[in-house]
Length: 399
Ligand code: F3S
Image (cartoon, rainbow, N blue to C red; front, side, top):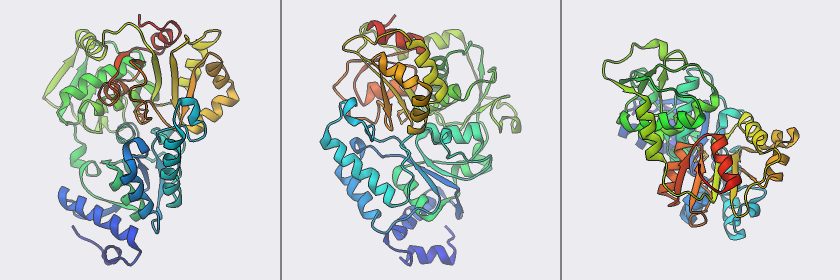
């Protein structure tokens, strides 16, 4: 890969150890993927923040990097393993909290804005169409590529930090026009209405995509909330971190529908729900906000919970970002949700928090959350719309 003189000097250590280490990572990645050069990025989203995933080895790596590492561009952070202010209310131990705080402090020392959310685009890290960025967090990468038309590969934790410290990324993959071309056509005949329907559609398309970029037709214009859930699901189950929806996403008009095609029928949707739902009737955990809940989703949850009570012994988490929670406080939504017995799970979520073994059956609106609840946390799952999930929180039963 071609390096400028300045880049070579960074590699040789002229800007310190962290920069040299970061440049080494970017060069190695570029060479693996055949990049010709590095390109500047305007922002970075870092994932791999939870101490539950990082462990002591990850913490040590970050502390070492933070000795002389400084980010060069706007850099935000994925959810941590706990609410950074009120971890106790989510049942997180002080021991875990101490380690988690050290992780976040290391990022802060490097100049990272410690946002702790997987929806950075809702709270100020919002690239423009065509901008190159280096984001980790599969749902966020899929969102910026598809809904915004910015360009990012799906970075890993170390490569995202490296891109932030250098302010550049190797030019390969979804940064290049040729890799943004859709490779198969999905004709949607099924009626896609609720948030859970969008997640189930993502499940179907992800499973069929074999890593290809889908071109999707048959869908109406829809909300940001539905698109963020759809993308999170599609990439979790196997799609590329880019999709085009005819008449909805900004690059779809550049392409003709590919000849290789599949149709998604009502029966396919039913089958997806069947595959995503387990049989357990009793629910002991309801987790909403995957990806992190927007203000309008929090408002919807609060509206439903007015004059209701979450059943004793059941936990309801609404995972969201700190800025969304702050506005929810001002609008009175938090008071309603907490008054009903729910918990605002700020800065974190059910996947990255250390909750393995605490719950048996989870209800959620998110197909991505289903995947990790089963795989990582060994729970039974149910997926449905907000009303179904909140009914389960109130009654303890899935109906
Ligand atoms: Fe975000 Fe956690 Fe879901 S990081 S996308 S809420 S699994």
